[in-house]
Image (cartoon, rainbow, N blue to C red; front, side, top):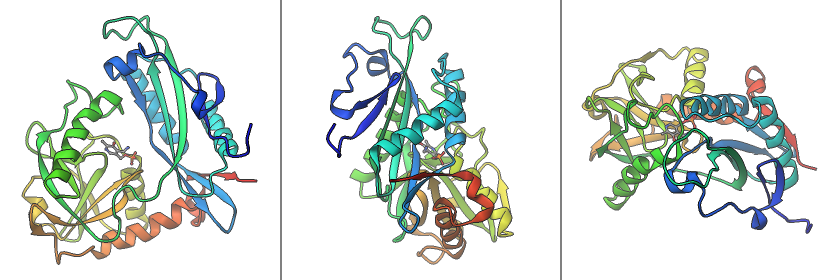
Length: 308
Ligand code: PMP
């Protein structure tokens, strides 16, 4: 194979990207029945290696998404981690990289049912820099699309089909001139961004929604909470009202893609002083040190992959 071949992992084999094919009848394509993860690998130039951030936790969440969706993970979490490391070694990215594993309903019969329907695995990697701007401060709107709820397509599971909801939310926000959008739950409480979790700061205290507020149980959200404990920043996990977005001192998104992205305007109102706030900046700095494997305490979250 040529030196620059990009491989994907497809159902047991590392295959050159252009040869990785699945049927046009695939259930996941027809009905949105796949679950997935988005994982980041951070390039560390001095060490000539990629650090994959919280890979185990991502595959564990994928296992929980599978349980909800009557899917059998074709491999164990450990095997998925090993396969991912091997894929990175084959692709040798020398840049920040996004890793996208999916477990998908691979049957080709018509009808949405999940049983008697085999499960396949796809993993690909692609270079990824910033998914949203992390420096300038985002202008966001409260979406008039509601987030899906637990008894429709559960947001707790990372199900491909549910991202049609995210697609409507982000597309309309962008067409209206905003950078991102915040969703409300069925009860009109604050949920999250289109594909990221949300924190605000009120009276010096970080606040984020409950995991029972129809959000994805974000791994970055969990990382922020751990960092807040380390930095002695008080935090509270509770239901948030929409109007708290208009009077908070700071707000920021967090997620594998979003990383830590300060929000400086919500629905044409400045957040705090209208510039990225000190707590968001402090958390952002520590976050980037952690993900690049520079903080000993959190090195166990970073899987090193040496790029030969
Ligand atoms: N909410 C949604 C809907 C998402 O798609 C994501 C991105 N995975 C997040 C939150 C953030 O989750 P994580 O920090 O685990 O990437």
